[in-house]
Length: 318
Image (cartoon, rainbow, N blue to C red; front, top):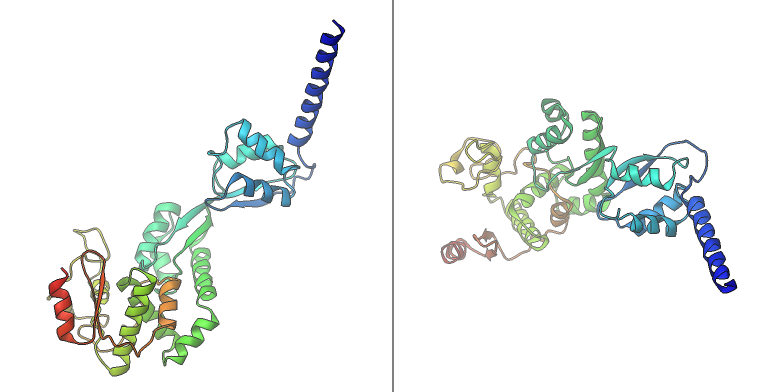
């Protein structure tokens, strides 16, 4: 009988200890109601979130937070985004906030989009004024990436963010490299926009950039299909800004952007290039033996030193 009482007493003590620990660890860190902006990037796991919450002084224990998430099956319910949290919140309140929707919205701009496509995406996600965005933005300098924008973000704020990101990524090292190739920074961005639309991988982009730079240096027309697509504009039947199949007649369109009828680079970029394309231009080698490139229907790239070899590539690789 004494043994049973002893066991019951020990269990009771353990329960009280656990209950006390649970209440202590789940309670607010302090009475400080100052709000902090807490950001959870996409793909971040519970351990990293717990570590960051502890560093921000929003929870008492990483271990308890992970235990709480596990016990309540919340791992798959926490969202990426930006949240307003304070040290006066309990663990239960914090986890509820992390499930209830971000203060900001993640928006992804695809590499090679033109500003009209950026505007469509922003209108879809944030209901921004498309015409105002088109007026304030600058083709080629709106850096494509994934951004976290406040739901109330203004067009000015968005344009400024995209441009500042471009200036940060197109750093002085890259600018110096393109200048050493005889290109102005503007010409480099224009060329990068062509490379973006013409190359699908880092390797292909470097090859295309080298070939186009060589053509520029010898005064040869660039003959880039993407410039024709840009000049043609929105295709109503395809619901796309980039016409899928370019015809012989398309290549005769009267436009300063058409590199089949104009020998120089287009007057401005035709899309917003990625860092990969900017890097490809910076690393381009005009000494490449090739003058032509061709991408077949399977996505493979073929290079040629003269027109006859190029025509053979086209004929043999549909």
